[in-house]
Image (cartoon, rainbow, N blue to C red; front, side, top):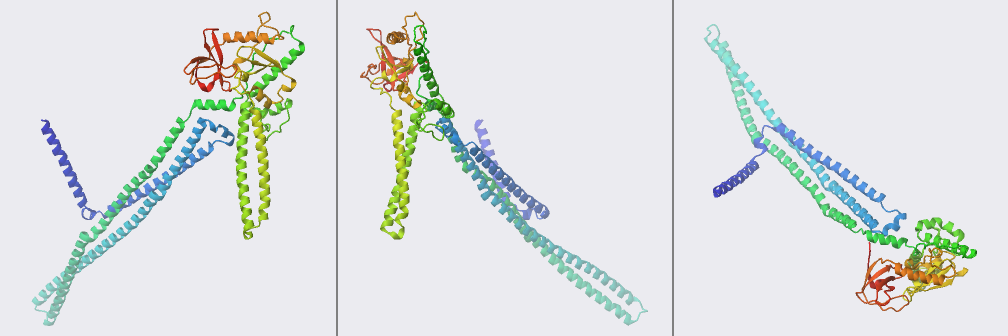
Length: 611
């Protein structure tokens, strides 16, 4: 049964294909000249409508080109309006802003592709459609003119035939009347022979005229039939077939232009797809952690948060020392606040801080000091490094210009016809002067950078890098918990923010002292700082909570004061993170006194902090 069904379906499909091929053959053999020989007017109307449809398609393409052009222009205007302004260039380092710039670039490329589509449609498709329409109208006009001439010739011949037939009919009637008249005259005995002869002559003349009209009618009829046969079998079909070819040419052109327009769109599709891939890639390149790190890197001041305000027992302290302590704390806090300000805020408030600060450095055009000492330490070093790089670039450019002038002078001296060497002398002197000034500025800023970078070396003593300025005293903590108090003289107080960079560039968050104990709690007075600090530091070690854990990536031998050794793979507790000096404070349990604490290089460990 299934075999019968399959065979039946195969026979039906083959029959359908055979029928389609026969229809195609039949359609190819059919022509307007044979099938539509009597539809000349309808064919004229049809061909005119077809060319009008082609013109309508051309107008459609023109409107689309206008839309594409307007769309591309608006895209480019959009990209231009959202380009980062000059004041926003500093934000270009963030991955989100870089992605947005790449997005704008890709959208600009998209606008370019829409312009390519517009230009291609205008130059290739619309121009072709316009030319084809013009050609078709001219050919149609000629075909219709030829058809009209053929029809006019046939009409003229038919008119001649009709006129010859009417003449023949009239001559035949006249000859018949003349014969009747002659017969009556011949039978009438009253008429003379002369009158009978006259009737006979009239009859003979009319008969001759009838024969002549008959021959003319027969001749015109033959000519008409020949012309009519030629008209409907050859001349008119040729004209109609030309109209058919014209219409097929229009239809074929319509198909090619539609496909061509699609090809124009398809040709830019791969580039548009790459633009979309670029946009996706730009979006995927955004890294929130990297942007967070860059924000920290940009605005990190290097200062530490304000310490706890100590309790001051007025009954046990000298009034002068209390006043000095208050002044020291307020100064430290104000510097810390300045360190956390953004660069723009500092620029606006530089005049306020400058009232009480030092006026040793001249101010730049943006209100900052020449050595950027009014900025926090980290930002100051970055500004100085950028300034040094800029000066080095200018020196390289000026050196190349000077070398070029010197070569020109040598050429002029060797051949005076090329030029006067004295004309280059002035430019050479000016270049040398600029180069010398740039080198002086470079040396000056290198000195500023060297001064700003004078911080305690971490490898010598990690504990020493975390000094604190408290109540007019500089306290340095050691691994055993002791504290050395160094009373600062007036000269040691920072006269501007630049001096502060050398004394507080290293963070000290975990080692700050906090004298918040009330009288009677076992804490010494202000005159017993050393003993009080020892007691507090020992108590602080016991109460510090771990911030996380770390694993030693490499073995480390403690070679400086305050550091502890560790073995590769050893796990330790992190009790204070790196404050920017390259050291991390860790702790581990031992069997002798309970805990070992100290500093290890941050690059030697892998930290996992608690959430």
